[in-house]
Image (cartoon, rainbow, N blue to C red):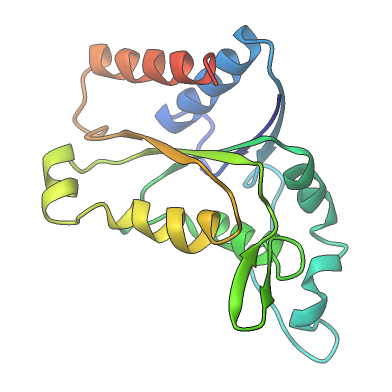
Length: 191
């Protein structure tokens, strides 16, 4: 198996980075080959630009994102590690989807119907959230999950799409955080 880990958090000393390390350690323990893309460290430009030089129809061959498209194409499993901010992913990760998952590469249309081109790939979203689980499920109704699973990943043919949500991080104890990291490690070592 070949995994692509996409990390989207600017702090390399915080808990989300520890989650990313647990992902890598779990993959390594399982002998899974992986490639890590650290969007902030790589200064990924999330801005989507269309003009007379950069046409939307040519995004599938944009040289600025060619490396990322190649990594997605060769991965069997995509793992996204990020925090939940304002009920969604960080803008840099949204920009990654906007720029890399281009028409003609990640999806196309057959007549009026969309057709995912990234079939035979699975994905896992591993994200942190300060919100307690009951509140996210009851009042926010997992909007952060629904915004990525169906309209982005499944739309592009990626199935199954799973998630590990680490709820209530801000007020969590050291013991709880260690349990979170252990859960992430165990999940990634059993992909």
